[in-house]
Image (tube, rainbow, N blue to C red; front, side, top):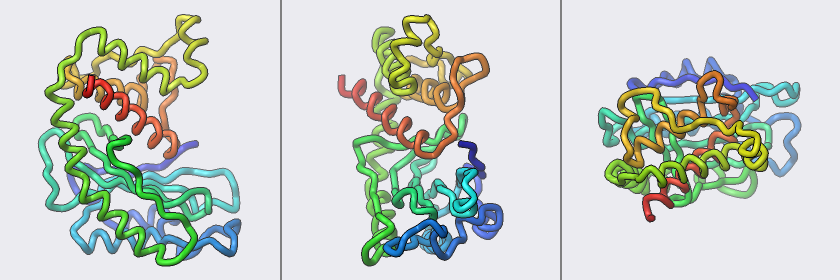
Length: 262
């Protein structure tokens, strides 16, 4: 599934420009295929509420669909940063949330981190549960706002993890183990066949000098980038689908956490 993305880590995106670019964000009702129990979660309203309360929008990703009844109601992912968030030369913590207006998924919020140099948008794994709000029941919009602030209150856990990753030095064996885990996550049931055929993707290669270290942060970043946006000839396709991106990011984060605890 192809996607459209607008991203600017340095400057907040203009809400009106984003809404004009992606009609799904402005929908005031669900797709025709949604049922009577469907409760709309208006992305545009929440975007404005957040920006009015000290958040800045820095990235939007919208899926593309070929299903005629879902065009204009597609799933989307947004990344927000608190205006007064701790931002370093390396990156910043972010709130990531996904929504759709076609009834295909719940609204979800995650804790994330953006690394500026490579535009790696990470999503925390099991250290922070995703906040999920279904498109049904009562007080849906207030649950969304409450969920956003629940994630915000725990963002420090992500920055603490990043600091810990930076100080954790890995042996060659530990790096090899992490790479194999990443290959298994990425390939799933195809891992064994690809390994036996000698066609496993190479994930531990350095694209920039800043990623050349053996600390867990450097290893995590180069492996994550090489999975999500592999270079040509690496026997992998780029991850573009929103659900696949979120799932892979969270699993990889958990794998890094396991190394941190080892």
